[in-house]
Amino acid sequence: RNESGADVSFASLVPVGQPVILNFVYHTCPMLCSILLDELVDGLEGLGRTPGDDFQIITVSMAAYETSELARKQKDRYLAMLDRPGAEAGWHFLTGDEAAIRQLADAMGFGFQWVEETEEFAHPAALMFLTSEGKITRYLHGMDYRAGDLDKALIEAARGDVASVVDRIILYCYQFDPDSNAYVVHATNVMKLGGVLTLVLLTLVLYSLWRREGRHGHR
Image (tube, rainbow, N blue to C red):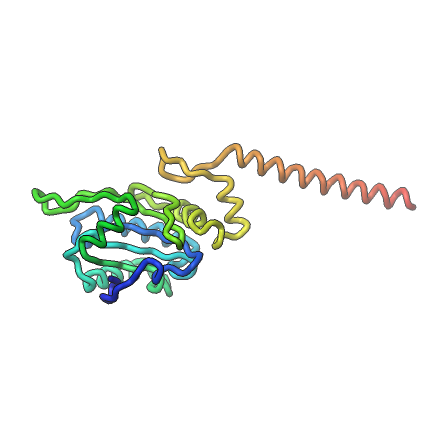
């Protein structure tokens, strides 16, 4: 259910061709989940894209006891923090029954468990990136969500549909490093690109000299 209490499906929330950032939280979490969402907002603030324009965010509560009303309050809170006009159309806060939540979490490879002793959920912190068809393309673990990493992961998930030529060149020069959980410079590809640019520049210089020599010979 969405934050208004209406039943929704993945397909109804995601326009064709738009990538998705999906995360699991629970809004009564004493610490971790609020930090995760705070860090996501920090990353989004530095991103040159707005949720709803060319990507979607789906935040799912893992706690079946949480209500749509609570999800609505959380959406209002984080939209106010982001302060980006139009973002309300692209950030969805969902709740559901336990079976539906478990089905989605299992499909995403996301494990969580209720701990009776502490009356809290034990769970990892991660963002998951998907295509509009629901194919998982990337996990960003932890809670350090830099705008550059978000941008590159969204371009990957969109398969270039939202990427400019510059975006594609930048993505070509970077690769994801699972050890650092971030995109790092791909030295080989940078050298290849540099070689191509050098060849193009050299060709232009030689062509210019050839044209000039030709004009002198004609005279």
